[in-house]
Amino acid sequence: MLLSAFMITLYLKRQKLYTPWQIRTSFWWPDLIVKYRSHTKEKKGKVGVWYYLFIVSIAITALSIVVSLILHIVDKS
Image (cartoon, rainbow, N blue to C red; front, side, top):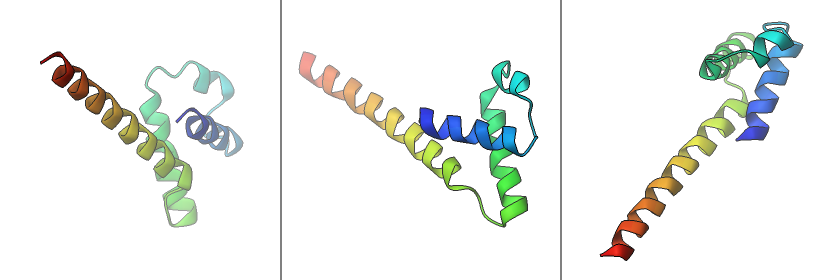
């Protein structure tokens, strides 16, 4: 997840969509992810691979937390 987020911010910086200061101080980081998706879709005709890797890693993290909580609840019963 961190690698894909880093690569997305690096892409945004290289394309001069955001300055390094804007990226560092961006409180609403999902906006950066959406901006990357929109920009790659417009320029390349398809969404960039780093976007998909980021979304999949978020989904895996959420799923592992839910499974961990379920196992913890079942273990206490």
